[in-house]
Image (cartoon, rainbow over all chains, first blue to last red; front, side, top):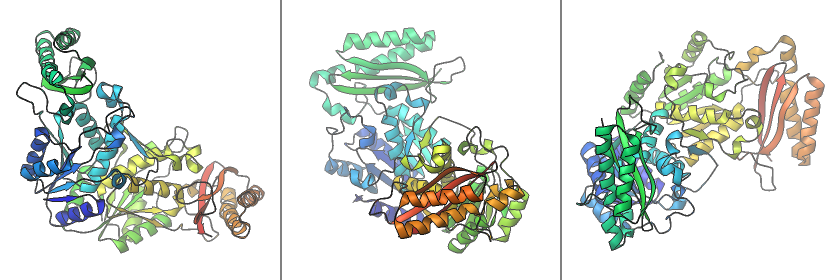
Length: 280
Length: 280
């Protein structure tokens, strides 16, 4: 496995791979890998000839008061983990390597970005679209892999790929959870022992909402039950808890086929997100 | 030469060409071809194994009071002309084929778009960036060809390609002119006989400004002389006449190396643009 830090090195590897007509899987990550990322990588490995994992904590998707500086980083550990699942190249550029120039062109996410995480993180999805566009152009993947944990991100990136005709396929992989149901996240490292004890209540709440909605079709009641559960079981603060249609992220109507119940909750100082996507 | 109207047909051709490791030149046009377009196509032909010309009057780059509906179209004539210079495929999609969906994501041009044509055509360059991004992803060119006549467009597209790492090279081709100096344009067909008689004064004015600037380094005087010439020789209305640094399109400073003198003038009802790019 190679670890490259410059665009020039990556492009030269990609050019060579493309010349041999091989398929490329791209796994964009911010590093501090957990089992969720490794599942993305091994899925890519099984579906493509060559797997590129990018490890880049992208500053443009963090707000001024968010955790860009403190976001956990450990490239040495990540390298070993990525190698263990057969990643072929890690692309780990510096911020200067990724953003040497700024001519002021921005990609603005649309209505799908105005709710859920977008409401409390203005500009977050614009930054995501900027970095994935760059990564797609640099790695020229046949397929790119994203975790369903970032359901809103996946929906918005799918819209980008569809509306701007990127020549690649977006593949999503289900959420990987701890034994007690907590969704794996690089940010779980921030949790105190007590936070960690409370955190599984988020997924429990989502399941409660889903079950109630399936039997009652009542959005408000389902949300209320989930909120009650979080308020009972944690000292956390709910950022959002919403039941929407998926992937358009709009209000549920009679003809909605796929549903998203999603939550963001501050457990202590750590903002955790989780979701369930389900059919009627 | 093939003429295709669907994305599916184009993608299947491109896939085949790519599999054979051939280089692709893309010539994006709005059709109603003139010698300028044909020079772009023959330059592409000489530099690439395979040349794709797109012919698409892109509605998203026209303002509500502009000439989208009346923009001249003649696909049959264009097809013959393109074939005569060796274009391999014409991609001539419908508006519905290009824009079947709209998830609200937009690419916003930056500060380079706030002046010149951007000032009088708000949103124009956003529409240009939208359509070229789609065309770049559909045709996957090695090189894409644009006329220097649209100097601001070229500068903005070069910024897009640089800042978002599109895996392709932008090539520009000098302005092709009529014998009396008028820049070739599909919109010249709108000119009445009297308009046509007056129109060469635009290029004359640009030359006057350039010569005066080279001898005096005085921006204001140079612009004034050019404006005087247009006002004397035409009954037209100047939209803009500006001398800027190129390609950043900013105010001229002591260290500016490349200059753009650019004008847009209404001759009758027809808005004509022209420019000269020059060194000190």
